[in-house]
Amino acid sequence: MIDSDGPLTWNIGSVRVTRVEESVVPVPWSGLVPGGADRVDACRPWIDPHVDEDGGHLLLSIHSFVVETPQNCIVVDTCIGRDDLAFAGDAAFGERLTAALPAGVEGVDVVVCTHLHFDHIGWNTVEVGGVLLPRFPNARYLVSRDELAADRDAEDTRAFVRSVEPLRAAGCLEPVAGDQVIDPWVALEPTPGHTPGHVSVRIVDGEATAVITGDLAHSPLQLAYPDTASVSDHDRRQATATRARLVGELAGSDTLVLGTHFPPPTGGRLVPRGDLIAFESGHDQFPSG
Ligand SMILES: [Zn+2]
Image 1 (cartoon, rainbow, N blue to C red):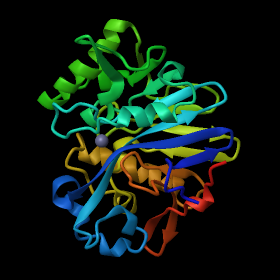
Image 2: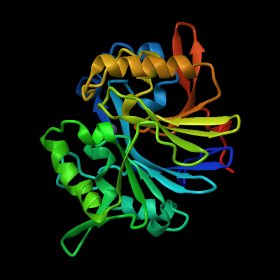
Image 3: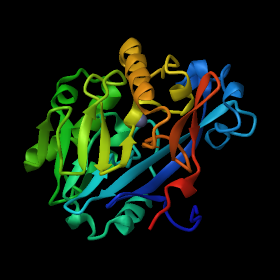
Image 4: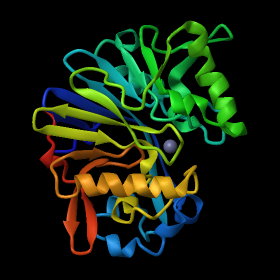
């Protein structure tokens, strides 16, 4: 059951994943996924939790995932967190995230940045006495080498200066391969297109598997129609190929898909329904323990 009083959680074998929300905002399809407006009706009813009442806006969630394995506490993406950027973050998010961590910010072993857009790295750092420091003082921050080497626009450069350069100065930024293995349960997986070095996160424990998407899709509509690009996709052809590859692999499987921008219920399976691949979100299929 979804616990409306607390964050969503899932168990993937011995790995526990918790969603910690910063915000959910309605965004017109034209502003983010222009091809979505004409396709939303074909995706009903399963798209309903992901759109507003008349389907004219997608609901964009900004959240972190806390991934607890038998060896590590991992935070995947750290949301917006700054009020000097295009979107304001939520000042209370830091408290919610800390509350979801089993041993506080000091107990986080690894932070994964799926990519370096501002809405994924904002809470990487904390300002103390005018100095930006790593928010998770004992964590290694993993960023793919290709992502670090990529060009950045002005907005992402501002975010990089605030949220990545202080990590480098503190010695905790760890450039990694796109398929870096973190521990026996969690590994990165290259999913380029949205950005050049974009990664998803694969969780495996025996038969139980899950994928944290990152921004390879902003709405599950893009998994039903992989050619529906986001305006923020750096390379639309590559992003479409990446979505199509993942959908081809996961459709009809038991793999839990955890959408980095999908509002509650956030997790689901890819189920072939007629001509389309539906994102079916029955949270009861992935109960928390
Ligand atoms: Zn994003």
